[in-house]
Each structure stands twice: as C-alpha cells, then as structure tokens.
Length: 160
Image (cartoon, rainbow, N blue to C red; front, side, top):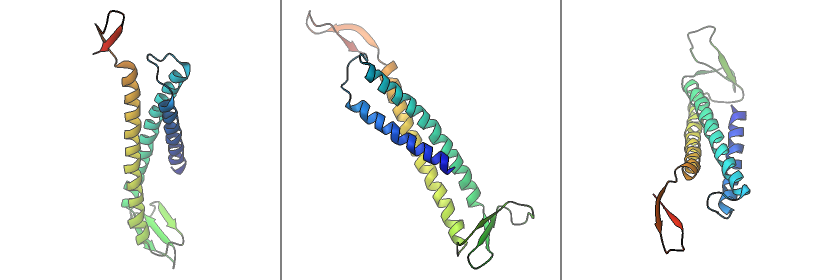
C-alpha cells in the first residue's frame, strides 16, 4: 500500500506542475498552439489517472482502517505486541509488532493514521475530479448562439 500511496503522491505533484505550466502558457482561443493542446491533454489525462489512483488508495486505506479498528492486541514480552482479528479463533491471522512497548499505541494510533489517509486521499480525489471536470467543460461545453455583437467589421461570437 505504501508503494501505491507513493505513486499517487508523485502523480499528483507532476499533475500540479503540468497545471502550473498550463496556467503560464499564453491563452489562444480554440487551441491554436500545439503546446497548449498538449498541455491541456496531458493535464486532463493526469487528473483522470490521479482520480482513479486516489480512489484506489482511499479504498485500500479504508480496508486497512476497518481491519486496524477491530484488532485485539496483547503484550507478549516487555516490548512486543501480538494482535489478532479474532482472539477466539486459534488459526486466525496474527500480527506481531516488535519494540512497541504498549499495545495501546497500536489499537489507538493505527486506526487514526488510516482514517487520516482516507480523508486526505478522498480530498485528493475531489481535487482531481474538479481538474478533470474543468478541463472537460472548457473543451466541450462551449456553445455559440450565432448572434453577432459589435460593429460591422467586428466578427465576434457571443457564448450562450
């Protein structure tokens, strides 16, 4: 899961850098420059991939939160803590945390850590969804009414 979280973080940073470059590019109507079109396409694709990755990391963090909040832990040695999901099941999967000192650190801190990951990755998914929507709307939701405004020589179209 840490690898997926790291990939998601790197992808979001790269997306924000592309968005900053896109912000700095001089805007030309109807995407007449290749670099503007490539930057918009890259930003749209990165936001879409970021949305999928963020939702995936949120699901994994939520699953780990559910598991960590149902752990039953017991002190084995002075510093080791052994946790299991069902203490009555003799063949249940056990997790050994070495050099912890107190099992309360596992049962209280670990679920909070996963809950913070769920919230932050859900916010990241919302930001990526907003970026994807803004780029899609900017490209595909421009309709022209066909009414001309301005002087006789001015041929500008009004957006509806």
